[in-house]
Length: 152
Ligand code: UDP
Ligand code: MG
Image (tube, rainbow, N blue to C red; front, side):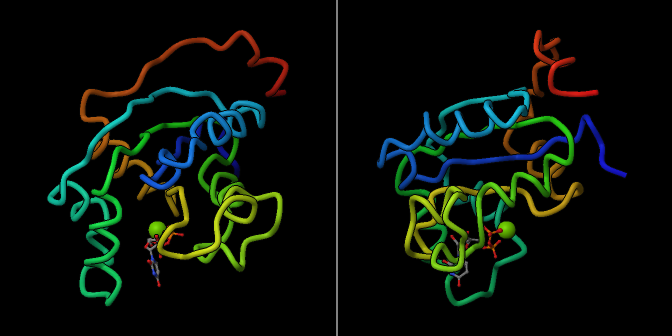
C-alpha cells in the first residue's frame, strides 16, 4: 500500500546547479504536493560520493561519475508524501535522458547519461540509507498548512 509519509532523497547534481535549474526542480516537487523536510547546498567529497554510489563501484563509468559529482556543489533534499520514492523517479525520468519522456526533468532539460542533472532514490530502503548519509543531523518536522488539500 502507498505510504502518505514516504520520504525520498532527491539531489540536484553539479550540472543542474550550474545550469540554474535549482528553482525549476524544487518547484516541480513543491507543486506536485510533496513536502520539503530537508534542504542544503553542499560541495561534496570524493569519499562521501563513493559511499553514496557504493553499489556502482566497479562499473566502467564509476570514476567519471565521481569526478562529475565532485565537480561543483549539489543541492541535497528530502521530500515527503504519497509514494514519494516511485513518484520522484517518474518525475526525474529514465537514467538516460534520451529515453526520458518529455515532461520529466531529465526529458525536459538533459541529453547525456553522464550529465543527467538530478538523483532520486530507487527504493524505500535506499532512500532511508541516503537520507542518513546526507543528513546525519536529521530532517525537519513541521505541519504543512496545505496538507488537507493534498491528502485525503
Ligand atoms: N551513469 C553513467 N553512465 C551509465 C549509467 C549511469 O554515467 O551508463 C551515471 C548517471 O549519472 C546516473 C548515475 O550514474 O544517474 C547512477 O546510475 P544509476 O544506474 O543508479 O541511475 P539513476 O538511479 O541515477 O537513474
Ligand atoms: Mg541510482
